[in-house]
Image (cartoon, rainbow, N blue to C red; front, side, top):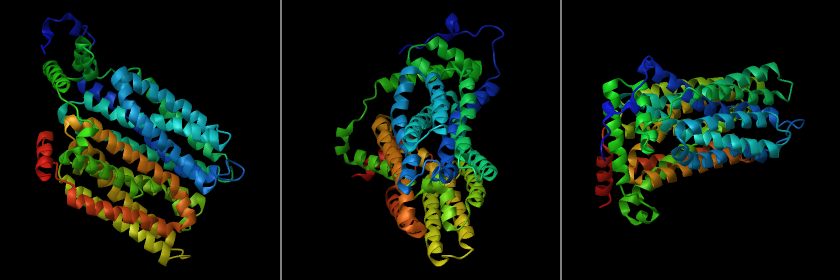
Length: 475
């Protein structure tokens, strides 16, 4: 592929007086785009406090099963949103799809807030899930393509921070609204409608966002791509990066992609199974039982609804702090060590909750013990397991395997997320808090044993080295 002579092409020059400070503009791009992550977090976390009010007989009159359907319908929508969001962004552009997602977030949030019955609620929660799933794929991709290589990890993981921040804000608003309207069953409508505010902010903000220069270059719009690079890079770096993008696109076009028939190859099958195991384990340990049903868990242990809503804010605080700590450790601690340590801590917390709920039945200390153990659980999960799940899935698949491998692993991740969200209220009602968390502990132990045996160390290795290690390990 021929390189464009940038300096001689008038279409790639910025008009005088239009230059922007690259660092400030990139910071603005990051803040605006990660509002999608904030919405992701708020919409998955708000159901935590809304369900106790929503389930009342004078409201939607939910059973344990329909509670699970309402909560998990968003996750089912997210599975489809993540499946098609990336393809839509490849065809229409990252910026345009983020604009579509902001509109979907807004209208689906309105629909959930005014839903007159369970059927309508589930329908709008599914639509909201489409936006959540799309955001989970498109926004990290957009950030990765906008960020300079030396800051890519920091900027992309900021989206994860915004997700847990959104969940924290949901818990705070739930506690405030629940305390203010404790006797008003319609309090859940106020909780849900707040999500329209960041959706409006995202929509307005996207209007000033540029398109991804890599996407423009992939469509042959080299001049437009260079103009945007000049806004977020220095002149010399912009020229160099555009050449690298062109070279990378040419390499991708010449790379033969793998298909399902290649699963007959031992090393390919091994790496895909590992990816599925990482994604499934991250959900089957029960993280979203706490993120979606934390208020109900605390109520089941002995807290009243108002107290449970307030106490649940502690879960939001520790989640945010843990992600910040985890982000600081990602480039200092080996991936394998960090993941296994995180799963060990998660397992201990799950078993402790199960034992406490059995031994301390009817004890006034039980709700405080359960709260402290959920905080411990979140510290290990959000500080290690959560961020490493996505990082490892991005690292273990070579470029020619990434499409089928990443897609399959993420699909299993969302399916397991959906199953936990759907059946947790049923399990809690049928077999109790103790046995439910013992089941999560079994999955956690299984994942820990499997990953201890098969998870390789990827820190500091190139994709080619990782691929070679898998091939060698399959001999």
